[in-house]
Image (cartoon, rainbow, N blue to C red; front, top):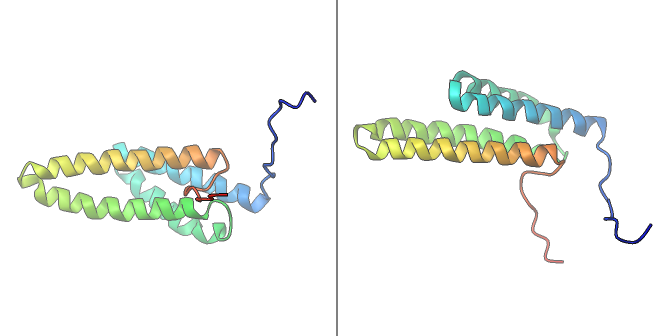
Length: 125
């Protein structure tokens, strides 16, 4: 070794973590499809809600929290956006929720496929 190779301290995933990763990626894909079709948004959220207990204590647990919170906040803000659609501000809110949801889903897929948790832990040392 020349000393220039990066050190790889990544441990292999356990079968339980692999299962949690697979399920979270499935939920993310459903949620992304749901951005454009609607019904898959609900299917992805239900999938995450059903599978969250299997991911407790794994690296991917906070991905499930991300999906579920994005779903509920998206529904809540979309209802407000529809109500405010009588005024122009509702359309702006609906577009903002749409973009915000896409960002969270794409970020989640990227981090999950890289075997990282959704939230970056701050470690000053």
